[in-house]
Length: 155
Image (cartoon, rainbow, N blue to C red; front, top):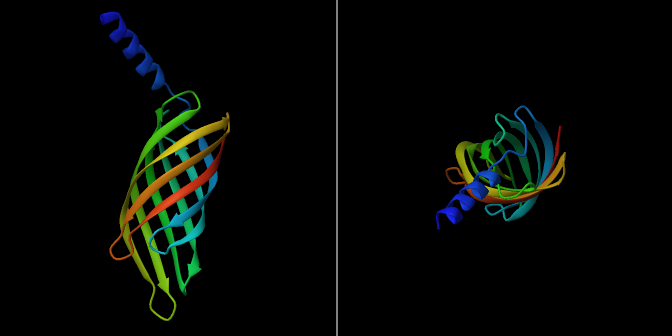
């Protein structure tokens, strides 16, 4: 029983090994779906690894106009990557957002809020990955969940 426990502990520690290096950067894009605007959008992101598993991400998302209503958001998030395998990673998302809603014919609304969510990332190559994430942006009267599918080039 102890041998099995030790083997499991060693395996878990091995899973938590780093896949990225401190100081590594990434540029990427996303295709998004916003639940408040009920439409798709495009996004761009920049990532920076503070440690081997902790990275910051700055992103901008623009949602296409629907029913004379447009939206965008600017985000600053932190991800902590849990390495499920050498190429597959799961991460929680925690951060801040600045969101703007612009109904045509009315004044636009810009407000600060908070982000919480999670994602999964798969490394296609050493410098290229694809990801899927769901993030909830809690912003007074314009909160929404954002579902994203994207790719990132790491350098």
